[in-house]
Length: 555
Image 1 (cartoon, rainbow, N blue to C red):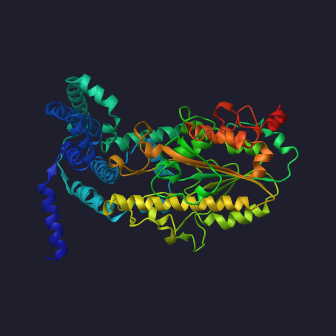
Image 2 (spheres, rainbow, N blue to C red):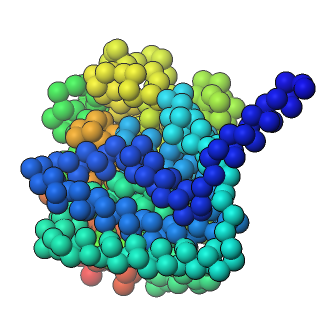
Image 3 (tube, rainbow, N blue to C red):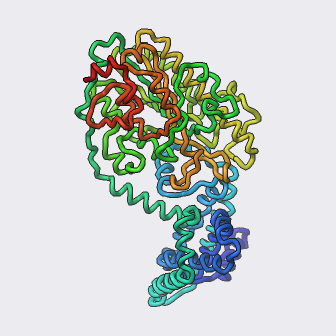
């Protein structure tokens, strides 16, 4: 007998020794996943139920039986193994990010994953991730595949899954009713608890995402601001106008020295006549949500994915008014913002100074921007979507000469780095963003033949280990301030202020005012003197800051 034949014989013997019914295999798999892939879930539960062991046990049994009720519907001989293998692999993948980085896998996170690029996602596939998935996913999946299913008669095969579902639901309900008041309070107050349950949270998130997408497959985009027209500032322009809107990436306000941070991350902007808004906040905690929201007419409370993709944004309104509008992208795409305007991607540029392995740092914009500004002959708005501080590979977001804060974390494996190293690497990205913004402002200021301005606002912030959280994408209801408090900076040339009649002192008086992405749509319209019924002065930071001559002209 050959070695291959011996292996097959032993494998068949092993399979014969491990013969289980589909329902028993389902029960054991759920138990494994509950124990092996739910470190965060157990940790939060232990904290919540501290000193109430019996109540904790009842709750966990209820979760077990509820999961069994749902999974038992797949406990047929022809479906049980593929389904359980999928569950084991899914739980291994999601549990790594939940337990290692504090990420919550909800609908918005799944949306973010679905629109990401290979260049971005590959940084999340680390040695630690691969080892975790191998141990907790691949090997258990092989065990499930090798289990031999006990033969059952057709009636029992058809009835048992349904009966198990009904009985399990009854047991789960009974256990919850035993202490309903306490359990209901926990579910209401501690949404992070069930949000960390694997594989329940990602499955629910996937279903919600699929429903959201299915509702928007046949949506027609509604035009807005078709009445938009240029105000008096365009009647007798001495110079063409160029406004650059910089959509930052993953920059948090807490790490801007402009906002009082103890590390000098903004040495170049501090020397420029900018207005730094210290109290600005994001619409979401991930690019897929925040980027379309910040350019939409909807406030955070009113915004939804369906509304965002079915309604034109402020860039369309500016185009309706006759401005030349363009989008340059060095990230994972425009998220629908630039569908109706000129768009250029910089992610695949071949410039060896700034680009490596399918990604570019933001310095790639500068030479192109200089040439673009030299060629402008009409009033123009240009959006620059940065790569910024996108993690976890912060060390890839800046050139070697900007590794100012050391030692820095030079890996995507945060567990291999100290908190200081992670923060140093992130601070280096902020310092590089400071450099890019300052260089852009200097470039604009040098163009005497243009009336120029720049407004910068990040899409969301970032967690650097506070409360065990890393990266971003937490559900907004539980997101820490580090993920929602974002930097916002404004610069205007003298020619720009003169042409648009802007009282810079008045605008600067609002630097500590509570602002958010809600203000961007209306402030761009006010700043650029674009008149439309879509404009809401109460959300426009320039509304009360036009000089008397400009106000009179508008009247």
